[in-house]
Image (cartoon, rainbow, N blue to C red):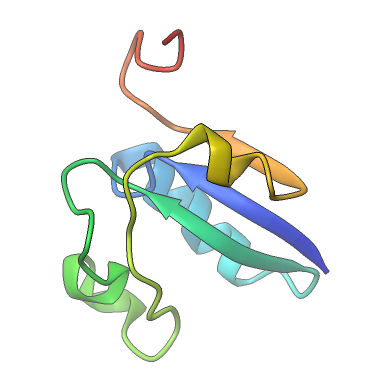
Length: 82
């Protein structure tokens, strides 16, 4: 199983990536990074994830993401640079 982190998970590109990863049998989403929705379940932000993914969003943390096998950045323009 591949452990994945998605930084910027609640944006347009990020949520599409989350949707695709949810359907992959070899991927486990370990981290959903979101500055705006930290502390909220992804299924509360996007109702279509109810009963599919009940994981809580967290502050985008590079340290936590580095513990995953792969990290995707879907952050706003220029935010990945920092």
